[in-house]
Amino acid sequence: MTKTGKMVWVDVETGGLGEHTPLLEIAVVITDSDLNEIATFDRVLRSDADESIEVHPTAAVMHAKSRLFEDYAAATPVPWWEHEDALLGFLLQHEATGLPMAGSSVHFDRRVLSQSPLKGFEQRFHYRNIDISTLSELGKVLGLPVPPRGNKAHRALADIRQSISELAFYRSHWALDELLADR
Image (cartoon, rainbow, N blue to C red):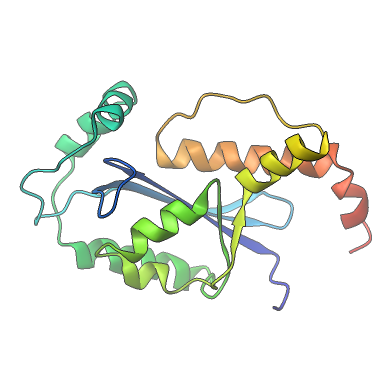
């Protein structure tokens, strides 16, 4: 893979963890290699095809607390293809197609997207993921410092920014900045 200097972070908020769970919100953040934000996309995903959505009770509590349900109810319903066109346009505008998808437990986001009306967006990424939660687990196993576990906001953009902050922690505390200084 060619070094691009960019990372594309993705997070979705859903109605649960099961198969074919409803998508409620998506955020995408493009950063440079120093983790500075270049561009941000954040959208509540209400479709004109959504008549009623089934939400797991645990997700219902989280999304009521985060006010996502209020924002979902207030969002103007649009066809799924318009959501996907906006996402694809964002990636193309910032020359960010073909890159790995980054995030925390991003395999979940990727699976949900691949089974959703937004699967064309998911297909624009490299097959590899950059999963920050893997670093947390690796740090625990190897006895390396890990950032204090904060509460997830359960809003897509805030959760991405928390993942970016976690990667910044690993870079500085695992001496990765020293290794990267020679690049």
